[in-house]
Image (tube, rainbow, N blue to C red; front, side, top):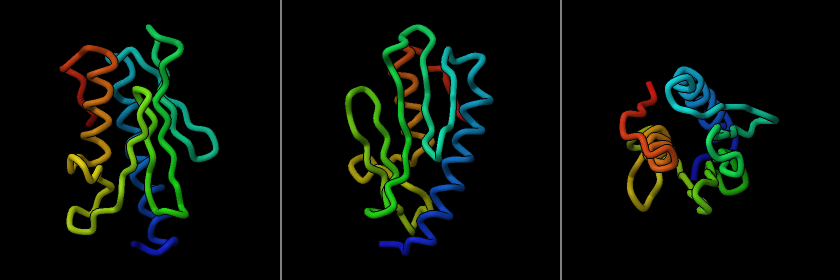
Length: 112
């Protein structure tokens, strides 16, 4: 497990990068990105009850994503130097793209 300072630095960096990618993709995607108190939210225009929530969980050194009534717990993967979902090996950007595509029914969504 990585130490707390490294976790905070890496999670802040990856969530900020993800936020910027989401903002760039908002126009074509039908969703809106907002951040409050270090928690990243994606809201959907066509389904006001749907929401994706991204939050760092420092005690367990994971980034948690709540989407599609499921909790995805990403762990730091030193070899990939990324937060990944252990079950699939997807990094946070790849997983977010997949979740957005599923939610919006649009396979053309990409996060740059």
